Length: 214
Image 1 (cartoon, rainbow, N blue to C red):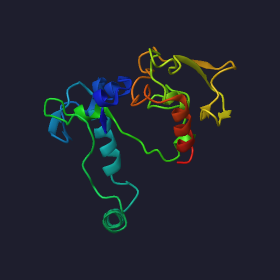
Image 2 (image 1 turned 180 degrees about the horizontal axis):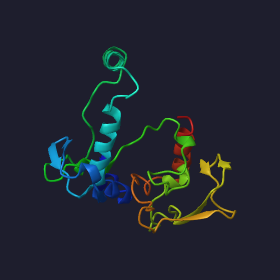
Image 3 (image 1 turned 30 degrees about the horizontal axis):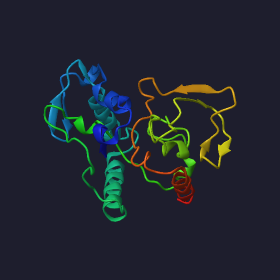
Image 4 (image 1 turned 90 degrees about the vertical axis):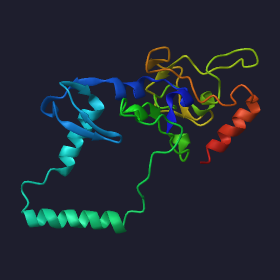
């Protein structure tokens, strides 16, 4: 997990997951559990809490068409499977993120989860919001400046399915597609620059060739 400050990418998606509220309906004035304790849902409540409550209700509701012995047998089978067959063990969230608090029980959602680099050549466009069209562009800085004459595109076309094996991504110029504008909220292409301005273009192309092999 990377906190918004650490990742440096567009904040809108993470902020929406925490700050959006909605009508709680049947959950109004009920207590719902969080990682840091229980919260009381008012008529206008965080959508994260409402969705969690609804999901738990669906998952834990017994199938009405099954006899109770069959339901218990299914439950025991599921428990046994999770204990003996599941190689993925329970773990705490890891990374550089802000932990939940009793005052802000969904604060840890103000972060993004880093994905694996395996198969990254096939996952364009890049960043969590698809704001960078190719791997080559991802290795450029956000803004051109002294010593960094190239920068990530501010606008580009999306909608093509023609793969660009050189820059690694979909072709984003020379056709009448939808224009992606990075200046809009939620579309920002900042973040994850690392050594973007310290690499030569040859080093950048070498890194692209390496990423193709993952």
